[in-house]
Image 1: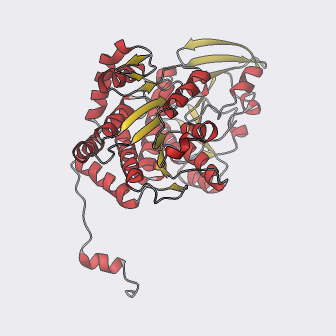
Image 2: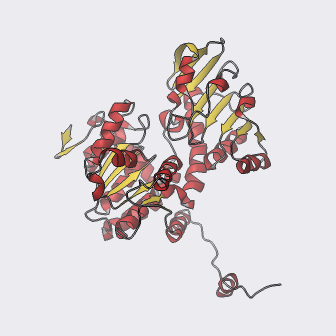
Length: 423
């Protein structure tokens, strides 16, 4: 489809008015990104930049797109997950902001990658990614376009893992800022955002009661910590499964039960994967689960639950509710899969609250600015956003919340920088 002389692919432009309301609502809770956008509007630090973004197409993302455009950039957006697009938001960005969007909720794998290629066809100078599908596709299929790219940013843990693998294998062609490694991202987005939004998605899909349930959290990174805390706070008994002995020890010291997933399988009522790895819940785990067990994923890709094995060991299935499919196993027990094994917080709900995405997308906007200002000075590696920018974001967030903090006195600063002071 075309409008205003540019291509796009969204479900229906008639949804734009509803999408505008959602974007405006999110904007109310994103004061830090609002301050960045205001400065961008004045200074135009991204003037002339072409940016292709592969992100969850949500109301919060829409505010990031508008901030980048306010900074002088030309922006193009595609989805980073087939089930995470808010169609009304996509329509509003096209119709009201003049931003080409290629995303339709529920698109199949073929359309998903076609949309990524349409974002790449823009010949971006900067990529903004969530999961590294845009970057990996660009490296695999669009060698000639890659010469135009001066750098990129990456939003999530899974994407950073892939990019570091590319760096280790000497195939990464341009520098990437790992936004996920900023403290104002992973300590808040991953812990508070994933913790709340995942439970929101589960509740919308099932309306189950957490109190009294046994919840198995697979993985105790920042996302797992957030989930475990909230599940326990709602009255659940929480079991953590891990492969990292340090994280497993931390989980036990935090008061959770820790055991192998095969031991947890017949005990758990609800299983949630947040590891970033493949086949975490596999055939042998599923066959040991109790009748009526619920399984879901909140990792970026739909690989953490072996859905192919689930289908192979099932003799029938039926949809009970939206995003809620019951499989009858060959042993006669039933297992319920939520959101097709995709991100349950975005497929069955609305993703992270705007208040937490305010920090994440302020990181994204300032990382893009940093890349653009430092083009040609960075090697093709994965970098952290400079700490001073991370701290600036935290200060802006505190200011927006009306919170003041102390400052070091000169004496205290001198003491901390001195090695001579002792007992």
